[in-house]
Length: 181
Image 1 (cartoon, one colour):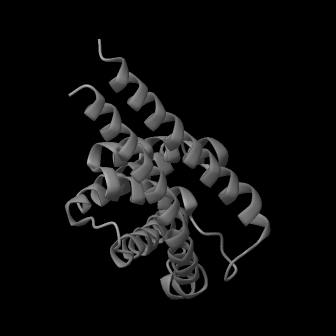
Image 2 (cartoon, one colour):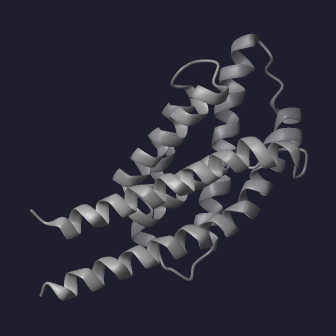
């Protein structure tokens, strides 16, 4: 039994959970009182997209499930509404993981903004179109675009934070692997 691999997995799980908890508390606590552009940045979507982008589809899916479930339990009208979107966002962001370069900020920021716009359309469809309110343009201008901009601004900070944790974890795993060779 390889205790080093178990330790690596446990540390990965701990730090990922800590980042998800931090994003959840910031999004639903602090940022709900401080509005950027009149909207709240979608930090859990940022975490889902960045983990999918950094570590691939499988990690993106699992982080998306946890983030989506947290949002469903906290604000969801229907169970699985957020879980469904976050799961697919993590999966699709994971498809871009082969284009990952550590010094690159444009692609992860653009992915976060794009997924936030898709999330806005998803919410518009679920909450407005089903209630026969089909005027998309005011919703796009007042809610979706400002939220996408604030999400992209916050994505830069969260990308650097998650990349820092990711790099330290990879270095620790490599040091541990070198000891056994």
